[in-house]
Length: 121
Image (tube, rainbow, N blue to C red; front, side):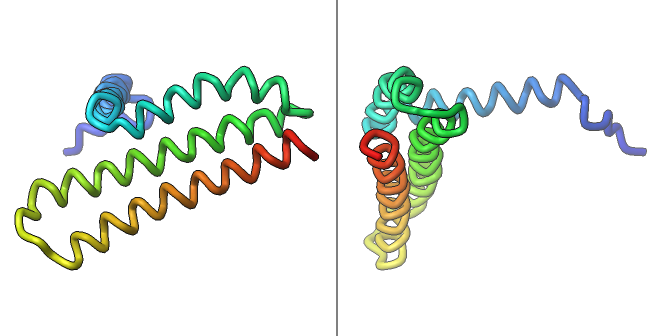
């Protein structure tokens, strides 16, 4: 018989939050890019309220920075796995790292475009 407590299992949610917090801390402590993005987020939140004309626009400006951080977390996870198992030079490892980096760049471009539109138009 399953011990499934349903969707409101607070102990499971607590453990999930704990592990997620550990992941955020690990990325913050080990990835300079993530720390820089956290600083940008801290500055962007008040600026989003200043430049956002509507609540939706304000939310999109903040979410655009969070998107960068989300992609950075995933890129860092990919890099950690490759660094753990990829001791030798491998074309596919390099390609995976480059693609993860490109994903961060795309997220940054999305954010820059949103901010330019909000500030200047």
